[in-house]
Length: 401
Image 1: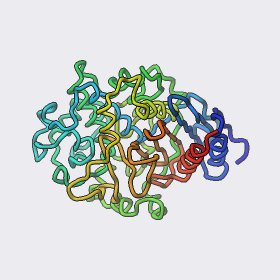
Image 2: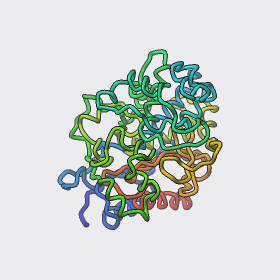
Image 3: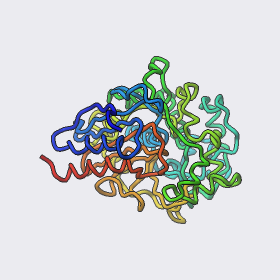
């Protein structure tokens, strides 16, 4: 596919990264995407290209925004880290210190660290969630607070696809002197100081014409991609009585697939698990701030140390009860794991997203990285488009000019 519009810049020594980005469109089926690397506060890679929808009529521009699915989880974890840095949220305190109603149905001794590390068994919610319920933080807190865990807290971890964002929001709301929810807290405490275009709840004043639209797939299509998706997860998704099905279908997306939430009605919701909207430049800027010690946000060394430490190991091992493979979660983020040793060493942290997005901080290289796309691929992590970019970037880092 020649003639695909590509914009942006790369620093000297990163020219091959631009070539790799172009090859994503000509060789790897990309539709629209952006990729940014911020190193020591400098954008050494800042690229965008392709189209904002599958009709290929509108080019992806510098300020194009897109729904980033589970990349939102990492941003929510970083928002909670800001609250920890302020001394208002102690990772090792009992959740009930801040959220007394949480202490029921076997959750009485859950710590904030366990809860944010997806070990408390709240991956799914029994109460069906309507759009109105999803937009009501008080209702969500009541539902989550009363929920019975799917396993004994601390025994396992499991992907909290939606709930992790609502959990982070409630912890922040309960500890913030202003009582702000996650979206408002993030906007004030992270987005504004760093000057980013990332939103947990799209404001009314943001032009909807800036939004790229997701070209998605039906979950049934996953049955034809069992070599690239975790096959146990795919099978479990199709089984109505499984935890995986329960997690992925409240709110329901069985027929529409993940792209079903890419709607103007959904964009304004403060869904810190799957509803973040932004671009690679903004996400990489945020991770780059954390990777360089948080000078603008005034982050504490202790908070950064917590993020960089190895993930807390559940009592019965790291087998994810939802995705059905080994994964390592910590404080709202993922750590390098067997199937994807991202970053330079074990201090890295970030999140992958269904469809091909990935973002992380690499403290060893003092960089933040993000790749976002509107073309959903059939990989849970290490999508060939994203992985090609990451490989090219780290090759450039090995041979600086």
